Image 1 (tube, one colour):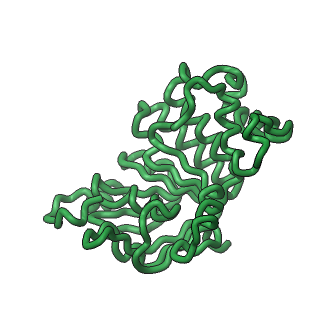
Image 2: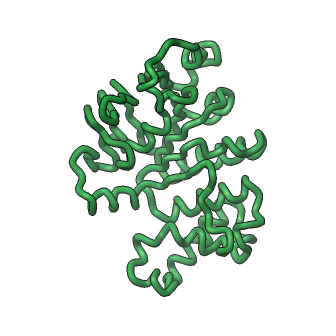
Length: 254
């Protein structure tokens, strides 16, 4: 199947500060691609460039059929509504119920109804369905505040699914979780990728997690792509090149 995300010779720069250069990437339906690299390698910048929050200053970047170098403001908003994003800090509304947090993923489709909290019964059924899929339907009426970190991240995944996304971008989604919870969240993301044919691009900083839970690995160092291969062909030794210290211009850190 055709890739949902296509990047060719991508460059991202802020004035004279080049953050990414020469990055090539395809992400296909149903696969989970891990993005690896040390702090300053450009992982977060690559994620941001795919939703227009970082400037594409060279090359080609296409996501869900949209050319990121040619989008106007309204088109960019529609693209972002079509991309499920999962963050390290969950970004839930603590005093809001778990169900309503999930429903916020449908705000772009609910239109004027959402101004008075009037989501349709179909929206609510779908939100409950996704909560059940992530194992939290019994928490639907509870506030998000007292949930554990792992539970909050599962709510965030259900919220992303409410967008009916073409792709899910997960930026360090398990870095604040203990190893057992991190495993469970990544297992869930990979299952969802397979079940719904939604590609997942996930940035990680723990090698064993990437080797266990991804189909392919993209490795960045100093803003350049050093590794792009199926996970089955890689191991910790081959990936260690991403973390070797080297002299880098401070302008290249992201």
